[in-house]
Image 1: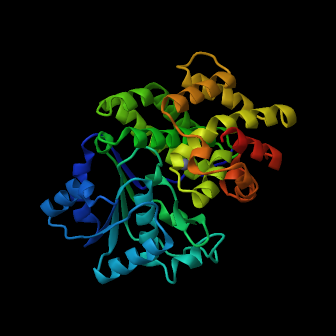
Image 2: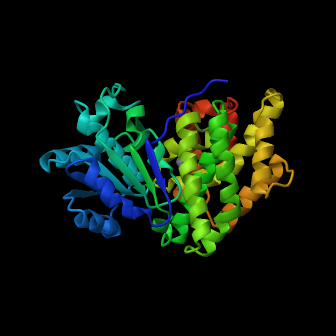
Image 3: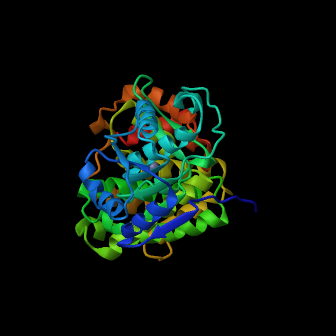
Length: 384
Ligand SMILES: [Zn+2]
């Protein structure tokens, strides 16, 4: 066995822990650029803490998913405002924007130079500016991952800025920040978290370290997801979902993902649909086709038993088979009223193009078995 595991230098977890942001800000740098979501008001508790600790800052708000221009604007603002480090407070998109801005504050040239597929794919050579990530959703785990997903509207693509230098220095995860999330956001982000725990667990690069966090994360989702949906202020349930999100981020950053995320990237670039909803609707279909392909072509592959174990964790630790696990996920997707792909405007005629891009997606390379074009198309068709 060989593996490497990298995560944030410091992870602070717990209800009410946001208050630590004040002292952290005081000791981390001179003047932070605070990256927030569309509604800056939601960052007010943080801004208040900064004021109380006499930390002056500049703020930039990011609405929707970060675009390449968002990063350029953020870096320019950091420069004109003389900011030397970054705080990101918000959902995955905000944290990703902050990560990319922190990276480009220290590296020369334009962000496009460093992007895969649409840019020159150069390697970031200098460590990012200090970055404190404070997630306000429980889903992406972006606070501990090494990439930022950026949209290029003119290419109709989403691409990643990626480097080990981009892992946030400090991840501050306070489940209280998720108490008032709307149900649909709890559902879609939670389903992303679940996908980001199952895919690394069955993927080609799974290792003992990522296995440990995946198993713990899946168990917590299984016992708490429905409660978090029914009662957003249930402390234990929100805590479990926040742990699951964090652990999913750790797992995917160190093991990789699979076909669900291989599809989610290109679909997200072509259509505007919440990432978590895309993952959720594809997860049972990908699982079913993966298992069928494994049984047909690679029946000694350990992923088959791993899928059975996932079903066992989902079902409260009773011995189980993958079929029961797929049913469990389908029921959840159904109960949470997750729309099918067609609801986002995706039609059969789009399948060849999605398959073409998905095949080359980096996440697809970690899928436990190489799927044929026909199988990939079948997955999409079933999720329509
Ligand atoms: Zn995801």
